Length: 325
Picture 1 (spheres, rainbow, N blue to C red):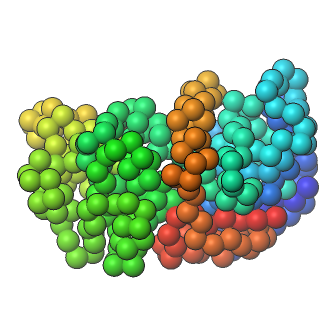
Picture 2 (spheres, rainbow, N blue to C red):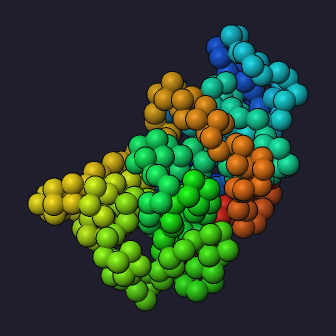
């Protein structure tokens, strides 16, 4: 088969479309013929040499895909050759075929094509696990989403609104904020021009956000604590603003707040399977009835993955960039 390889870490030009050995499904795995895969910022880090795949997983980038099952390993139940599916991956989505544990596979939701479905697994699993399974966002609470126009952000807005929460977002510029508003965001904050701490307090009568979903990390830590409501929960899922910061524990204790940090890629298979099962139970019906939808900014042929990486690096998109075969 062919896949996007990374012979040497570097810029987007480091991505090479090349012939590689076909994967073989192991015990409990299905083999998917890939139709599309979406780009995630973790893929950019892997390309740069900063985020190696977990041991034993595919060396090629790509944390999600959609396609058709063309093979079954021993011990697979509930799936059949020919099923149209999408899947959460530890790697290998930028390829013509990928083997994935059956517990990380999802049916394509009603009404969606395979290209659109490829934009769902990573964002739905990330948002549902962090905002709902860990931070326990409840109806009537306020969620602050940093990077509201990103793939994660556009999904977080929709899911939070679907459960009856109020949503605040930060984004860069009026055009991205307008797109967030179209998806249901109630409080729009241009991080280039406004202080999100002041704006969230103003919009909540001084109370603050009950849950903050943060992709920035160290740069925003102190301000996030200030922006939290009493008993608020800060869920850190990205480190675009650095990995180290000082924390005022007195401020944290005064808020009776909690900080969590979680990724998906390196989690044990049973934990990933539990998240995927929860997404299938809670999120897939919302996608099936049109209440929640994948936001695809654009599609590019998979051999043009370098250009897709440039687009994502420049934040020149809203939602997801999808690679197609």
